[in-house]
Length: 262
Image 1: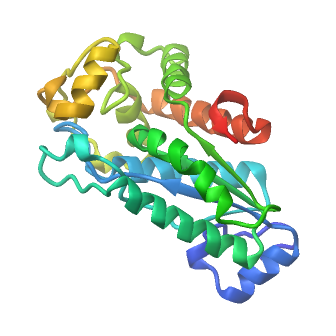
Image 2: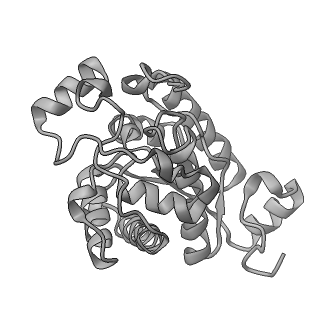
């Protein structure tokens, strides 16, 4: 471990002595990634959101420095995907209880800045709702920030896809050109190009969203895809990962800017 910055950023792969040394040397920021285990169309694996959250956390920690990564909370709130086999969903209160336990444990060890992001957009409203209670659970000198702005996230994907030469109309937010492309970078063996299918194209209206939350994603997309995976590429994936990493870092640095709720 180099002084002032650990070569190993993953908390679970460090010894307690290494964590203590990192804290003593000012490494008091920790990232908590949230994921999901849910369907992502016929062409992506169920663990896509957890893989995505892992990848973003590593990029945030290495970019910011003096930052560790807590174990990803792999399963999230995905009840609207349960009609598809394999999906596992936590109740909102279960996810909140896990997040509180993470935050109080980390704060108790001396971490002063806790950054939470989710690779699963469906966790955003739950995370936004629990944020005040997370802060109440830790000492006042511990800062907890969380990114919860789904509109800005998807708009960032649209810009990244456009700048990388992709079709912006294929961005829908779930198993689309953005998510498929970034998985070509993160875990290429998990992408099944022979199973690409177009899903619901165009943005989801308020009526669509209401229907989806009430009756599940099948009510707006028969195959669970929102957008289209066609045209996906590693170049688009690199662009999406870089753009969202920058968005999250800027948001956490700015506190209330770009969706980092305070």
